[in-house]
Length: 433
Image (cartoon, rainbow, N blue to C red):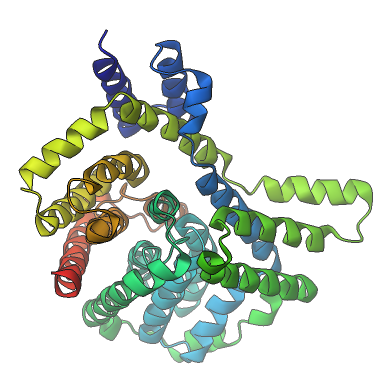
């Protein structure tokens, strides 16, 4: 069989199975990767060449660091402290929790952020005797918007940053201003439709104010270690382009240092147990999913499928950077609303790379790369299955007796996604065109 047809068939079947969610996504990706090798599209050595180990190292390193930081209780401390700073005003809490979620999502993965913030949200809204629904919606949207702002905030950005050797500051300067504007619009909108109508009695406010955020800090010494290493890692990301060190190396080094500090002085058996427990916080399903995905996308690249598609796109947009950026932005947003944005972005990266020579090179094509990042990340707000964080919050809400329906979510998610992408499109147009 023609290698191009065979590789395309394997990828399409794999993506179709991923879309149905009938099988674990890591299993699907690894099986598809193995089938490509068995089918003779390439051998194992060539397949490994397609794996972006910098991305995997960055993911594993940051997941390890966050797993240890979570033990200190710092994230819950910030959420409760912020709620008290607005004097337990329901309207103020809606705004402050959305901001906290966005900021955390810029430096943690979105799932971790909502897993930390949502339980605190339920505690606060229960004491205030108010509906948590607007708070949960705001936190879902803020997690996906905030994750767009930095290199480490969302997997699509990690993929793009690693593929193009972009620095932490590249994302910070290019995307954070756009994200800030979108967050302001989101907060104003939610405050208008929800915030100004939220009321709580004095007794409920007193209960929130009596919550002791200091009790969230389980280990002050560990907190100091976490803050020190996390700060150093972020500084390392900022300086990476000048130091000529990959972001994955910085993340792994930070994780190793924090593991050392976390277990230093413990007995042999206790030390090993603590290390194993922290490594258990790493989302190995995601790591193996990425590994398999890199291989099957590399199969499309090796057989020339992506180069052919890139040529078609150049023809379709008549070689216009402006038209290409617009097409990539909106197609990314729409696809990412319906399917996992990771496989979509993983497929688009080598395809866009194939277009660079015909369209003037890397520098000229940068608006297209930023369009891919913005479309894929912001598109996650489009539906309840558009991002993992959305599904996690919906599950937690269901368990707490406050279910979020798919249709009810769409009433808010579609406008939020469309307005976000419109703002991003306008920003890119003004900045580049």
